[in-house]
Amino acid sequence: MKLCGEALNQGRMNRERKHSKERKGGLGKKVDKKAEQKRVSSGRGKTEPTTAGIDMSFQQPRSPLQVILDATPHGIVVLEGEEGLISYINSRALELCGADLRGLEMKTYSAAVTKFLRMEGEVYKPEDLPAPRALLHGERVRGEEMIIERPDGSRIAVAAHAAPTRDEEGNITGSVGIFEDITTQKELEKLRSAHSDRIEELLHERTRELMRSQINFGHLFNSMPDGAVVVDTRGIVRFANPAALGLFNAVEGEFIGSQFGMPVVEGSAEIAVMQEGRTLTIELSSTEVYWEDEQAHLVILRDVTTRKRALERVRTLSRRLIDAQERERRYIGHELHDEVGGSLTALKLALDRARHALRGQEKAMLNEANELLDYTLDYVRTLSHSMRPGVLDDFGLEKALRWYVNRYTSQTGIKVNLACQRCAGRYPEDVETAIYRIVQESLTNTAKYSRASQAKVECRYKDGTLGLVIEDDGCGFDASVISQESMGISGMYDRAFLLGGTLTVDSSPGKGTRITCELPVKSA
Amino acid sequence: MEGYRSCQRALENLADVCERYLPGHHSIEVIDVAVNPEVAASEDILAVPTVIRTAPLPALRIIGDLSDRETCMRLLGISDHE
Image 1 (cartoon, each protein chain N blue to C red):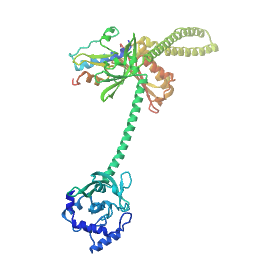
Image 2 (image 1 turned 180 degrees about the vertical axis):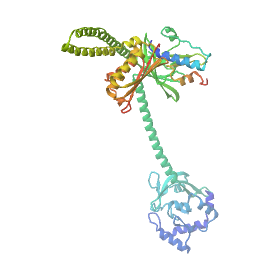
Image 3 (image 1 turned 60 degrees about the vertical axis):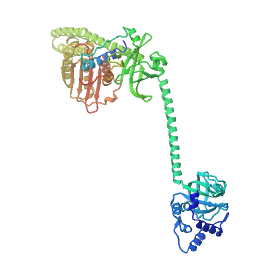
Image 4 (image 1 turned 30 degrees about the vertical axis):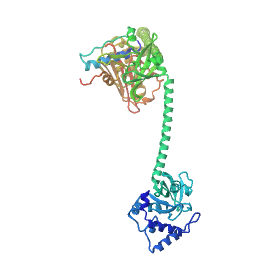
């Protein structure tokens, strides 16, 4: 601070002191700045350059050091003597304070000029300001943050530094105060703090959500009836829920870390798990996940043993039902053909003999009876064949289909194009029956509902599968609303399903109908 | 037995991959754990079908019907360059 003391032009300081004494302002008195400025200006006889509207003329002429001090970005104030007279104030300090504080004294300083406030908002007592503290107590102040409220009401934040100046004996002769404008810095800090608060709030929110979801996931995994196992890329178990432990009859401590194997399935597959002398059927599906930041597989295991057995029972019952139906049809067909047909044929022969023995009106009456009998015989024969065509049992699928299609066209007028490929041989009876019945049901529906003029039936054997396609050019229907109660179509589905095959119905209004069926055949 | 179809499918898929990409350089041993339950116990087999690759090392265990051909080949370390 000695350097600062030397730097000040002593003559100017004396002038300032004198000037200060001339001023009427003091503690508790309001300073008339306009009058003051006018007085100072007129005293100089000309208008001097100003800083922040404050006359700087008193500091003329300026030494090089003074020029430097005026050019510094920090405000500098020098107090002298016991009264704490402001003996020097640089341009930046005037600008920061927004008022001319020259010549004022610490002890008589009025806060009405420029207010100095603590960051908490409390107004400083003059003696508590950094520079006066340095002057009065020899205190060195570093970076004390405060608010300066200018006379126009605007506020800035500054960091104040202060240190005492001493004479050669070490006695305090004054002090120097330096103000550093930290308004922008504080605003940025405030902004950062606000953002930081928001970020922290968001972070907490996300953490809470994450914890909630983890709790939910944990609860979900622990309470779900399906087994859930997480395996790492070596197939080692990293996590297993209680249901999974139950499926493998394992305890968690032993199961975690054991070799499960890498799941390789497309969609899902059934696996078998041996458990205490019985075998469980488990549906396994898998999906890639991240477990503790590492790639892993989440394997879901659903015990379908009961469902599968129930399905097997339904399948067995359906098969028995269809078999019984076929047996019954075959029996009724044979009865109609052999018994009823035979009796009617015998009756016809007897009627013929009687007819030949009669003349006139009696003979004409018997002719009518004979025609009725012919019709009945034909009807019974047709009924017998529709129950169970003997040609299917005797000559196989292709011939049975040709017989049926010909009879169908003659009865309905709908032309049917039948194409058979490699299906002249014999196939298992249930397969031949299923194909025949599906064609029969499909073409019956075509005749009943489609108003089609023609239809096409393709049947071919390839790679162990009998494929069937039945198409018509009729009015079609909305295949997405096929009722489960539609006996005809559900019967077709059942037949295909029971033989391990598939059946699909494609149709839409105005687009005809296409039925596709594939049945596996073990041996052709 | 239950899971028979999956076992059949796994065997077919495995045999197909090996015959196509490792002709003459592989051998497949099928162990029916229903017939040899002691093997299942000694090998810690939890479920069937399980495929254990014993060579090349390290040993690797796969569970499922191997219907995901791409993953199966990747795990077995088989390249698709025929």
